[in-house]
Image 1 (spheres, rainbow, N blue to C red):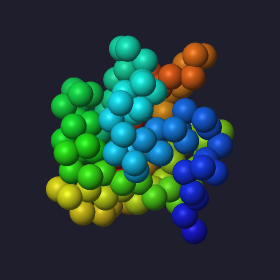
Image 2 (cartoon, rainbow, N blue to C red):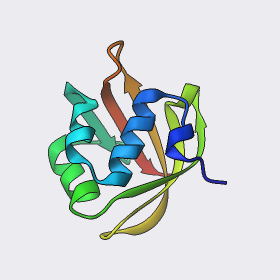
Image 3 (cartoon, rainbow, N blue to C red):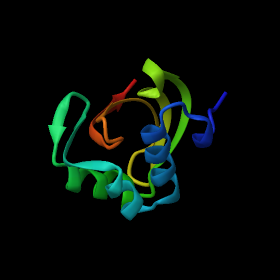
Length: 108
């Protein structure tokens, strides 16, 4: 059963998923710490390049199936126009100011 983004536990993760699904790049960027980093399948990636390619220019969309670690770890079906749909895991590091300083994703 899918968890609606509005029902996700962690406010930063909830906003992240909502920004991805609404294709709101400005909102998405406002959620990240200035020096935010990310990894895909265990390899660090260039954040700006990755989000453009994997989310915004390819219509990325997350459907969350499960959350853990206080809402900072997700199991989700992710789809975009490039890769289609795949089962993915997402983990987030959220700073005291509520911004995401790192996220990691990959196939689950």
